[in-house]
Image (cartoon, rainbow, N blue to C red; front, side, top):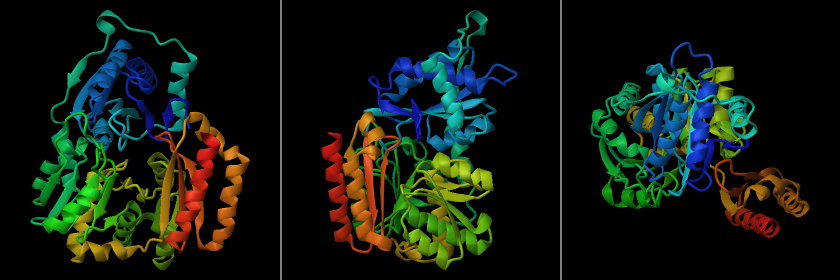
Length: 449
């Protein structure tokens, strides 16, 4: 993990950790590093989510970009995958998304994309970090006619919607779906997208006020969508996070469907069509062990990476795979996009639902999940970097692993985007693994507080 950039960009509490000064410095350094080989005046796209601090940080980023002679093209409130898609379409040299994704409103983040629309490699991010933190070279400021300019691109939302709509071959008219926009970026796109496809979409949480992004709604808080499904007779529901690069679902009975189950649905469909590249799915270490059984039963291969959709994508690109993702709902459908895209996942799920003619509760059984418990412990940066060396934490993890044997697994990891240490345990007995998870969390709390 880098000094400024975690698994999904630079992130922190806006205006205290992620300050305007830092955002301006990132803008300058990114413009210098990402446009070095441009043979014209560089252009960088900037999108943002709906949180109150996003416009402030956008202004700081613009100042940094223009101060070193690059132009900034503002595309407004859009999903993160819209930035990735529009960079090559608009022939930009790089892109920025200002968002803290699924995090609460006080956080914000800066995600950087290359000219091709891919998230940056660790090496490029380290080069940007070195410019800011180590002053590895002089960041020369421009003046006069050499300053950058600021433009607005008003067609961005519709261009993105059209791109997603064009991925659909089936007639989706009349399907009743509940759609939770998390009061985030999907608020600008989802209603128009589903209307264009003829879907009878019940749009929830699409009234952002700067403060309510992810607040008891969206993919990290499915309770509201679950309750809605129980009273409104929709065929299923989908939920996005704040920047709409994640998608989770809820079946007609109000039962949640996680990213692993969605990936299994996509894999089975692609396999049947002969379109699953290498008969392979790329997952992270957080994926449920039920995916192993699903893969074995269906003659599929699994490749496992570190947590973070950037690492999934790197593996997919390297070996030409076309399906990968995380249990959190980051799903990369490489035939259509080069990053996780919640709305793309949703419309592709709709298409499979229409083709199969099965209730979503049956479709979700494509993969049978093993019982899993996931808890988080608050941890500062020092605790996140040192817990793996603590002998008492090591000992309790080892005891639990020995108790589970071959019937389950333990995964303890520091979050790349939040001040948390996550403890995940899978096994055959939910009560047992819950007790084990509590044991480990208590030791971590004692040793890191």
